[in-house]
Image 1 (cartoon, rainbow, N blue to C red):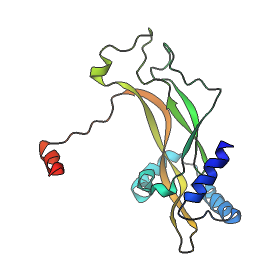
Image 2 (image 1 turned 90 degrees about the horizontal axis):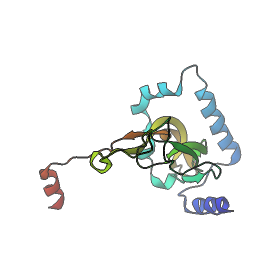
Image 3 (image 1 turned 180 degrees about the vertical axis):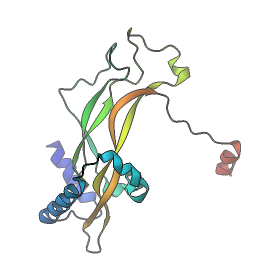
Image 4 (image 1 turned 90 degrees about the vertical axis):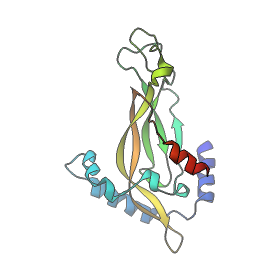
Length: 184
């Protein structure tokens, strides 16, 4: 019921309409046919500057929803002998992407675990925490509308979270000059 409501909402707010089922089927078949290669998907990274990525796509063509799988444990354990940043998987559903459903890893903990069950000392000072690790995969995504109002699809690099690791957050540094220029 909830999914139906979300799909209705997305469809009513989208800038253009989906292609009919027959045409969308052809797009899917063509995409899958082009993916059949002896090389790993990772070889697509050689051409990363030749294709759009997820962050370059207008938000009106994204209908992404994360659906948690109820039977998977999402709580942070006291300790984990195998992994300082355990994760679980959730479904990433987007009506404007082929494939429509992807699995995404989500971190179960915000802080890194140690084998003895303690959190690292001085966590706040080091900034270490559990962060998602991404692999970029090629998908078909609606990127614009045709003149007759139908969504047009093209290959796009999309980030897929494949696990979690203990690392520092990205830091952005600015000089005082750039801050003053933004204020004035």
